[in-house]
Length: 247
Image 1 (cartoon, rainbow, N blue to C red):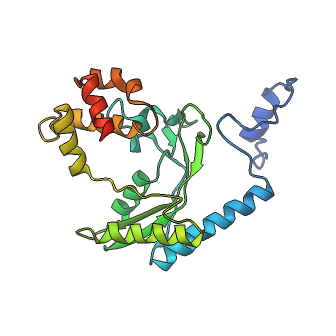
Image 2: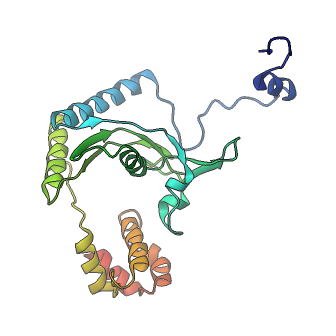
């Protein structure tokens, strides 16, 4: 619109005048790694999200959300970490480095640090997350996930409650131990395994330990031999990496 008396055209109008009409045929497919959600699919999604929400609320969790667009610095970590390599990041028109969120935990930490609410906190979210990675069956560049976080509780009580909530959800949708299993991650156990099988000392070389942890996460997605080169770069012999994968 024009400013009163000055005739200043809006940026949108100026861009429209400057941009030549496209003669290319419109691609009706969504961007690679994304998907359209038609009504029949939306019904299924809403049903699933409803189960997640009802389970979380039954266990006393409160829902929160954060912008899908965050400052890039929130996610840039040590070189080599998977999340840093897979960022959907760019510079906006104001010269700011931003990124589509690849996960929710950094946003949650930012929000908690900003307001410093009194713990314990029990918050949950169902965020849409983005990662620029090779698309495979069942693995796209955008996805939703169900997060439940407990802050300010010592001991294993928080983990036990989160596990109970997960089991409750599985039961609510008709899944049993015959269909799914639950794996419990322990950094202390992983540190001991890496020390025994690969000679990696978590206390003496934290950076090397962290890099090995990233590769351990990948062992569920690719065969051990595909990571021999990566382990070798960290001073871990191929045989030792295979022994770790076999545990």
